[in-house]
Image 1 (cartoon, rainbow, N blue to C red):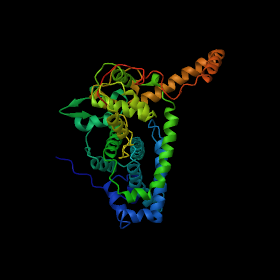
Image 2 (image 1 turned 60 degrees about the horizontal axis):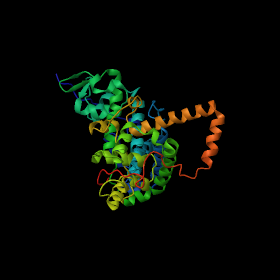
Image 3 (image 1 turned 30 degrees about the vertical axis):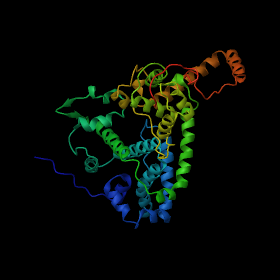
Image 4 (image 1 turned 60 degrees about the vertical axis):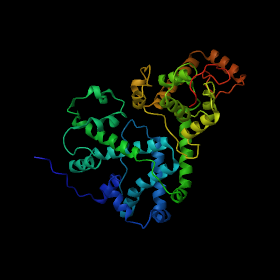
Length: 390
C-alpha cells in the first residue's frame, strides 16, 4: 500500500517557525496590495529592522552548534512581522548582491529551522520533508538529492563512500534526518538567490543594506585580517604556482583563485598584477574579469570562491593536508590555518621575548607594505609566462 500524503493544519505559530513554506508566503502576501506599499507601512519598517537583526545574527553565527530558538510571541501582529522578516531579509541580500552575505543568511535560516525541528510533531516534520522534495517516510533519499546536501558537511560519515547505497538510494539513519532536512533547505534557499528585485524596492531598503554591508566588511576584517600567503590552502598555492610558473590553468582554477583572493581582502590591483606575467597579457580583459568576479564590474554581483567539493569535481583540489579534512571551503581552511600560525607566533614570542623585541624593532624600520603577501611574485619580478589572461 502506498503511504498517504501527510495532511496537517498549520497554525500561525507554525507559519512563523517555518516561513519558507508556501503557506507562510501566501499568508504574508495577503496583508498588503504590493510589496512596495508594505515596506512603506509601519509593519514593513518593523520587518526591515527585524531583517537587519536577523542578518546580524547570521554574520555572527558559527554554524558549529544549534542556535537558540527564537521566541514566537502570542500577538498576531508580532507573528506576522516574523513571517515577513524571511522574505524581506532575502530581498535585502539580493539587493546587496554579495554572495558571501547570501550564504551566511541561508545557513543561519536553515539552522534555525533545524532548531525548531528538534521538538516538532512528527506529522509537521513529514509535511516539511515533502515541501522541500524529500520523502515523507522512509530512511533513504536519492543519490542525486544526497550529493549537493552532503557536500556541505565536513564529517566523514557524510562521505558517499561511507554510506549504504542501494538502487540509487542513500540510507539515512533516523537520528540524521533532521540534518538532511537542514542542509537540503539550505541548498534550496541558496540556489534561489539572489532574487530579481526591482530597483525601486532596493532603494527602499538601501539604508539597511548599507549598514549590513558595513557590518559584513567589519566581520571580514575580523575573520581574515591581513593577507597571509603561508595560510593559503594547498589548492590555492598550487593554482598560484601554476599562474606564476609554466603550468596550465583552467577557467575554473582562474575563477577560484581570483574569487578567493578577493574574499580574503586582497586589492584588485594586486590580483591583476599576478596575471601580468602570462603570455599575451591583456590588461583590459583581465581588469574586466577580475572586477566582474569582485562585484565591481557594473553588475554588483560579488562571487565567493567554490566549495571544496566543487574544487574536487573540477580536479583542482590537490595535495590535501590534515586541515583539509576538517573544512568544506578554502576560506575556512585559510581562517583556521591563519589562526594556528598566529598562535604559534604568540607562543614563540612568549618563549623568547628578547628575539621578539628585536624583530619588532627591525620591522618598524621596514617601509615595505605589510598588507601584501611576501611570497606572491609581481609582474615586475617574475618572467615566467603562462595563461593568456584570467
